[in-house]
Length: 199
Image (tube, rainbow, N blue to C red; front, side):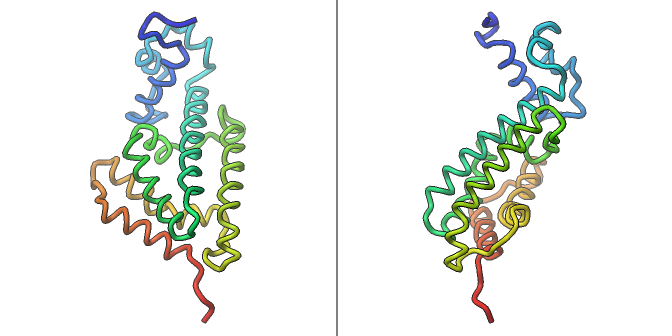
């Protein structure tokens, strides 16, 4: 049943309110009362949709991650060349953060829900599927001696670690990245991940 307020249902309003509060104050500093106030829902409405603040966070995190991964894969698979794909994903990551700052702050700043926490199972399954699809794109370039054979975690750190750090500085108001700097981050990722001829 739709709420009269803005024609949005209670669940949507809670998720939207949580996005604002969590991205601004952090999950730990956000109280259940402030979350309900931000969402404009009653206690009964809140508990009809969610069991706890942690439940809201788990659902929100899983939704944000899923949307980000879908756009990441769409960008990556649109590039046939190894270098093009590596550099384009770094540019995409920075662009996505700029277009979705509240969502990006949550992915950058908050610990993902663990498997035994609300949303944790969904996040784990999404990650497995995501890395499998990235690997499908990666393997032919590895076989063609273009990209290194690296573990998924190391791949992420070398590919997007510097871009994530730039996002943290950006969100903290310490530095706004320039187009030239974003290009440099892409080039650095390529240099870190490309396979070099044996000496």
